Image 1 (cartoon, rainbow, N blue to C red):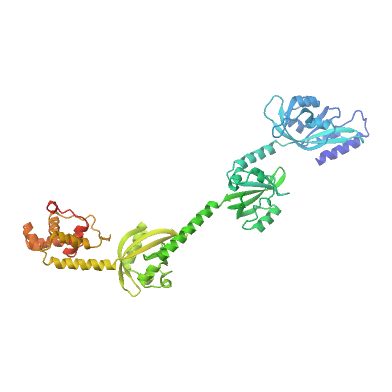
Image 2 (image 1 turned 135 degrees about the horizontal axis):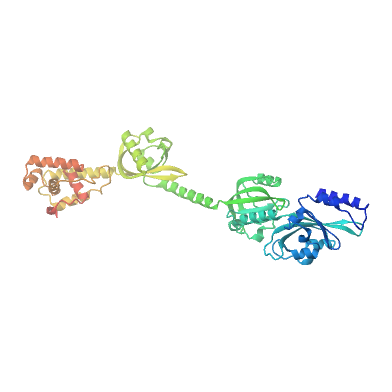
Length: 507
């Protein structure tokens, strides 16, 4: 542009020394002929006297005749529309305005060859009047910049910006006004487009509650990248939404801008709040539960927490156990028992109703049914163990077995109905290592077990089955080994608890 203006000034000086009626513009043509901008010279009478190669190429023609030697001819060859769709009236063509002596800056038009429906180019026009005297124009210059690629790139950006589901805003840096907003941001914030576009960043203060707002505002002022930071985005109802915000400098329409992008952190905040509330409820339930409980880490089995009921049953103090491993204070009857349950939880992640001996601080053994489950607490995998003290029940059970065993010494008078009632006094069987599942008895062993449950002695069984007394004793010994019983009482309870079918004679 500077070269063009300098050339014109030189041409005007040379022109004053030549015949005014036949000006020689060859020097001017040589200067501006190779410019990348299109330059068209128009006479005050409306004729187009010259155009450089760039101006012709921007219209898809090679000669001045194809361009049009007059303003009227140019209008016949090319249809113009303002960028956006509205047709340019004939008297508002940039070249027509120039002929009326009107200088102008930055007029953008879509240029379409006559007869076509879609524009071929987008031109940015500037009109300059070169004076000859105080009131007379010697030459009119139309300078054209091909803005097709720039506008197409901007349209592609605009399309991508609007279609992008990630919330975004664009603010101009010279006045901090928002010039673009996409649907993602409108959905995130609840604002309307009119609430945003044309307003400043301080009207809708997106940085006012940012995690590092002073840093963000300083970087915005310098036009530098704003790193990701959490912020409270204001919403129309006076509330806020937690977002992750970042700013990226960019240029739009030759203006420095800042593109703000957002990520919605509200789902994360709600999830964290729900998790925190859940963990608080768990902590309260854990602390005051009447059942003894212990929380240990899955990795290393370190004790993380115990409740009041556990401290009461074990006799240990809170500081004495928390942070230590069960092996440090040996909570179980033996180290082998501890290793066995650690292996079970490692292999299966949980177990139920495992009968163990818990060792208290004074080394008293407490019989417990232990259950364990893998849980997630504060982002860490843990083992939650619960203990049910069954010591009293076990003592009652053993007393009952002893009473049954005593009664069996002379059971000829003991009716089956009484035997059933004695068996029912026992507490429901708990799962243990030897549950009896899958025990296969021979027909003879089933006969022996059936007679034992009827209270028969070995001699009576021998008579009933026509066997020798020693043979009966061998059958009884094998039967005890299979079902894990140590005496007649346990055998009777084993059969009754499992509803064992003992043949037609037992119906």
